[in-house]
Image (tube, rainbow, N blue to C red; front, side):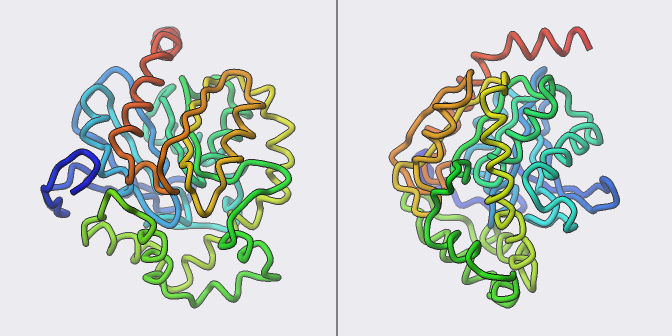
Length: 295
């Protein structure tokens, strides 16, 4: 049973998330849209080492009032990658390109995990791009405060040790931290396929850029005016809650919610996570509509 109290087993065919592919900047990018046509949009950035299916537990709830667009960032999920975008600031620029390519205007962006630094850089460089953003469960502080898994990735001289790690071991290790939600088999399979072969190893380049890029991000945080909702799991073994507190102390227009959960808050505390997103988007809806009407 999941947090919403439902025993229904989702299948790939019945899932509300039905992926498509498009080419953006020469890369094959996977995305999904909701079927509704609401006036405001939530842009969902998938976490690592998962995919757009990470939003399955909250998809229907969010789609009650918002149009949804979810994307696998390049090099993550099932999207093609390139070394040039595997760093937070470059990835933030790619998010802006993706919004333009998919016709997404002034959305409320949601980016847990690797989406945290990505969206904050995007908001720094493009102040009018988002109505609001929701981040968290991603490394953000300088000096770095991270769990042993990320420390091992950063301590290695190269990515070579991670190129041959079976993706099933990586995915099952992360999913084992869930207590209130069991990912359907097709979702687990998608996560494993997403990082098969050398894809997981190559994707570590993104977090290996943290020591340099989070210094820059820290300097920019006080100047980011976009409303930022921060959601952190109190018992996160990978990214300590101090990262969320670091952001809350430096962003001028931020709200922090700490949930009694581990790292995968969007799945393990789905109902609470969705409620916070909806309330934050509702709180900042006036700015969104004002910008859309003037564009």
